[in-house]
Length: 140
Image (cartoon, rainbow, N blue to C red; front, top):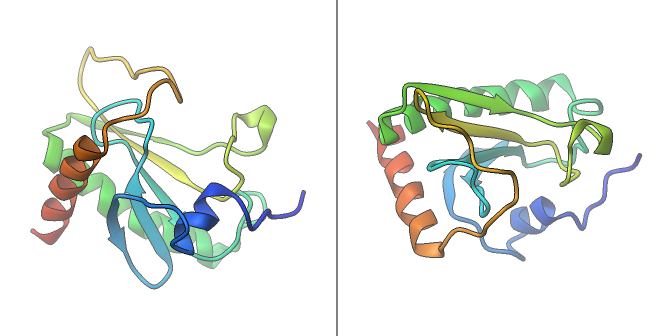
């Protein structure tokens, strides 16, 4: 299937939709998920079009994984998490909903289950505070 340049993440990259940015470099953007499954749920995307893992270039994947590692480490520190779950979905049968390559970083705690996917919108002020925590941890 073809890449849709009007997907929500493409609109965020163009500045047409807001996002609580956590980290950005020449190739990637990391921002808070507006319907988080846990505190600190962050997304990492490439800045160039890629529908998903199946059509991404090796360079896009390498850039994303560098950012995933940096943000995951910062999220663990920022929230005092004891682990990280990394999720990535491909095509509808694989659970993909937004058709722009993205990685979910989910800080985890022993005995605490993830919330259901796409269940409730988080308040903008909570997302802003969580983004600031991760940005500060990246800067350390």
